[in-house]
Length: 335
Image 1 (cartoon, rainbow, N blue to C red):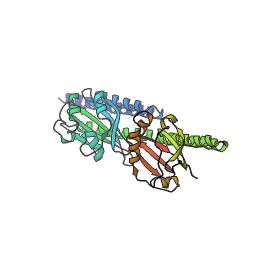
Image 2 (tube, rainbow, N blue to C red):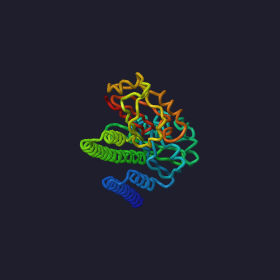
Image 3 (cartoon, rainbow, N blue to C red):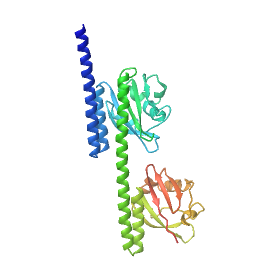
Image 4 (tube, rainbow, N blue to C red):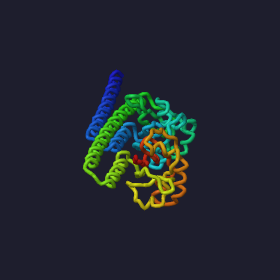
């Protein structure tokens, strides 16, 4: 009996060492990919595939990435789940009743749902996951070094129940590892963006200093505004009213054919626009009537796509139209 006990103990130690070696190898591989600046999608995919092999083929796992506002979660990578499901939950809102992942991100703590079919947290999503054959979902938030929610990691089980302590510890470890990866890539993205902006400013500055033609200068400024802001298109309005003293005059465009704006209604000379065209600061109110009028007027073509469902914000020296994560920046000239 003592020999059997010893044999069991030796096997337990061997299994533990094997798991630790597997985790160490995974960490090393992820670090290697990160340092090589492999695409983030590739790193996350390799992570979930390795985890899937580690936790068992009957389980599924996924990583969701939070947006900058920590308000929504978007698909990062998944194994064991259908594309239809990952697409259906792509962009889910973070909230107090948002499945396991959305709720975990909201609470900033682990959310362990043992029975999806009967748990109120899944009331809006259970019709999506139950056909996948999954009955339980255990999620851990991915928290950055400064406390920001970067996303969530989840394990799905085909059986009703809760994870054992070992799996829960593993889930927390994976979440911390993923946080390090996401922060590393965020830092790289920030540095790359700063480098791009500096190079753009240097190039534009040199061009402006060497250019004497007014039309070319204005076009360069408009192009630079679009490039620097990542806007969908841009327009430069000359600070001169038309013959009826009502509308500002369009001077140049960038990112869209001028024909699309040939008969397009221009910003009118109103109290709302005056501070901007007078170069006075105006932490602006949302101007929706002008946008709605333009969207209604433009029944087809590029102008319709650009202006539908937008908000126009007034700021010192410019107007910015945003559509989702993209928009158009308008740079008015000064007298």
